[in-house]
Image 1 (cartoon, rainbow, N blue to C red):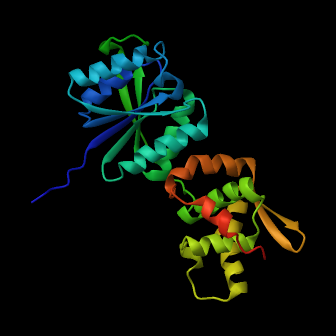
Image 2: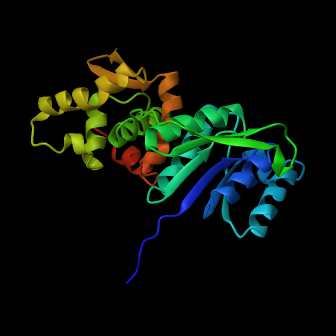
Image 3: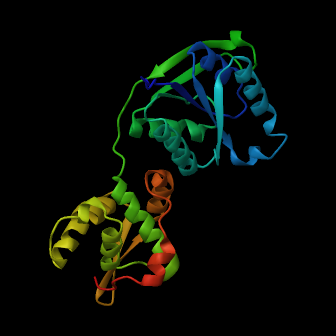
Length: 260
């Protein structure tokens, strides 16, 4: 019989830290460490120095590891990347080390953990040396759950953003047509045309407007939707939740219902 065994997965942004990564990975018997690196360090030999030392130390201790890159100085890039890693390891016990990397990754790690229910901890150290004795303590931080947007709301954000690049801000009718094509849950009810608009407003548009992510405007007889700056940032943070293989060119070639 095959048994599914939960791994202890530690998510650790890499900045100029060494001991704050290696010591907790060893102390808490991590089965796997996911190192979050700055995208420029993937190729930059100077920026790779500390990174390579961390990898060597993990190898010496027999701890599996993988590398993921993002802009660790951009909140939404960091948030989206860390959240995607947590989601990938949803069947494991995930711990996010917020004491390494940048201040931005610390904030991103906290937010992603709140949304997805991961554990966070902070490693206290006297200095930034590589001496294990510099580690004073490890604080497990309390969980404060926060609500993420629904997956279908993120799908609509992605549609609005992408369609705007192709054709300009979409009408509500175009959003409904997309939702039906992708079988989004909110539109599956057997209702007439006007009912579909009420479903769109209730489940998608109004919640996104309340978050300040979408704005609505009149364009001729139609109402069009566009993303605010916060909406664009939110899409970057939560894009990992949705199917990235949507054939957007298909919609451009087919055209969409322009009513609404």
